[in-house]
Image (cartoon, rainbow, N blue to C red; front, top):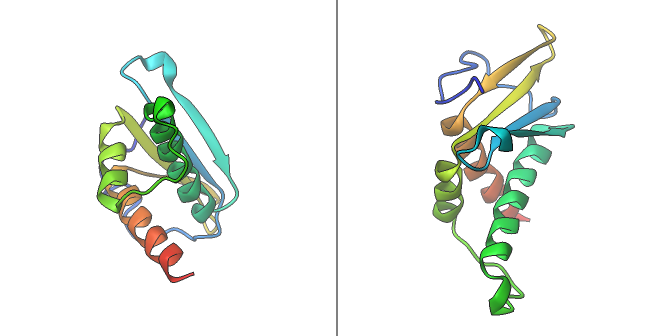
Length: 119
C-alpha cells in the first residue's frame, strides 16, 4: 500500500464528504490485505473505530465484556500496531484519489472522536 506517513495528499485538505477507500493489512501476512469502501471520510473513520472495537471484543471474548471504554491513545496504538493502514480519498476537483497515511488518519480520528464527544 502506498501511503505510509502523513505527508501524502499534501496541499488542500480532502473534502470530508468524498468517497474514501480504507486499505488495511491487519497482520504481517501480506495476504491479509483488504479494503473497505465508504461514502465519506467520516464513515471511513467510524469504520476504523469499528475495526478497533471488534479487535477489543475478540481480545476480551471470554471476560463477558458488555461495554467498551477506551481512550484516543488506545485507538492510536491500534493504528500504529497495524502493519499497514492508509486511505484513498477522492478529490472532487481532479477526480483522482489521493493517498493518506497513518499520521493523517490519527489526526482525523482525533477530530472524529472530539465530534462524537460533543454529540
